[in-house]
Image (cartoon, rainbow, N blue to C red):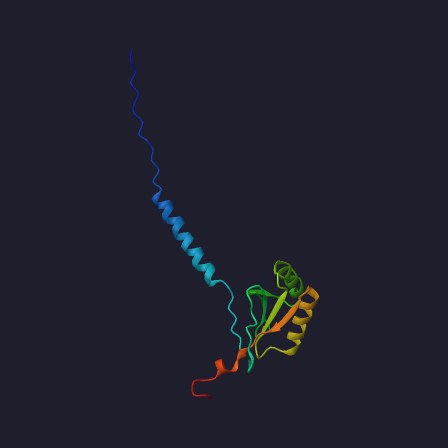
Length: 141
């Protein structure tokens, strides 16, 4: 007796819905990560002499007028500033720390940041400022 087997249908998994979901998730995470970096709007003090104080390899410490501190766009508390600067200085070749402080930030914050940079081993400590001619209005006021 001859038994006939039924032909099995080849199971085909449709991958297009899965690919659509993965691409949508990829786009979502790419867009959300670009908007997630903290932006601090500060009003730098003016100076008649302005040098290019920020270099590619320098570590930028930003102090906002509200007292918040940022190290290279990452929020840091004043207590952890020294350890974060030490870790960043180990990665940096120049050993340079640039302080960007708002006009409204206090001298005490500047002093504590400078002290933390010295303890962390910074070789140079610079102040960022905006040039006077950039701050003037077009009518000269």
